[in-house]
Amino acid sequence: MSLVNQLIGALGAHSGALRIIDLTTPLSARTPTLRLPSPFLNLIDFSLQEVSAYNAPGPFWKHNNIHTGEHIGTHIDAPIHWVTGREGRDVAQIPPERLIGPAVVIDKAAEVQKNPDYLLTIDDIKGWEREHGAIAPGSWLLMRTGWSQYGDDRDKFLNADATGPHSPGVQAETAQWMAEHLPISGFGVETVGIDAGCAGGMTPPFPNHHHLLGHDKYGLTSLRNLDQLPVRGALLIVAPLPIVGGTGSPSRVFALLDQGAH
Image 1 (spheres, rainbow, N blue to C red):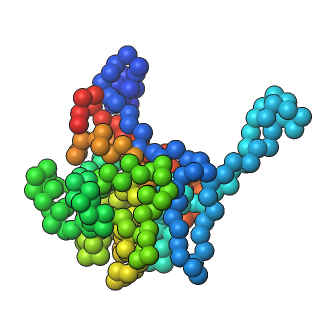
Image 2: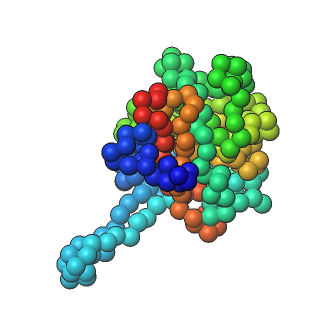
Image 3: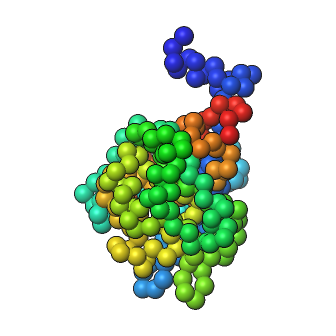
């Protein structure tokens, strides 16, 4: 039996061999989105505009126009999103094989519960590798923080006060090390962006964007259900719209894993 036929059989409704976990935040006008301070401009939120609904403009069908920014809800960041990747790929040019790969989950939910500004360190990643083995080429490194529990509450999700937004992310030196030394396709988070809330004040500003996108590695944001994934052993599938010239795209993200794996 071919590998493809084995996969089809494992995914069958009566097989029970594989599970599919949806890691995507539902996309609506209520989906929390990034808010940049003045004088920077923000993307528009997602909205639907009804064109017809089984009525005179379309008696047998219903359809809508969608209005959205590229970086809304669960989305992928392509290299050209950032100045360091400006000569790189747009979202339509990302090779499909880079959008499917092993999922590696680093769980920092306990640390983030104590400190919402927690920053992932190089030692965190090296410690994970000592315990679980080297991160394989083409993997997606996913940082579990528990932040998705706030995903239906814009204020808690963005978590901003007079000093700025507070949400977890990575240290600047970690971002550079990940970009230069880890053989990953990209980095995924539960938060609104791949950088920490305080990253605007780091050197360079927004170091995950700066280093990862500048090294042709991609970002995934606003993920959910990472608590249902094992630390390794799941397969990640990222499905963005192939927008020509696009700097990113809202995306559907799935994980495939063995039944019973956790």
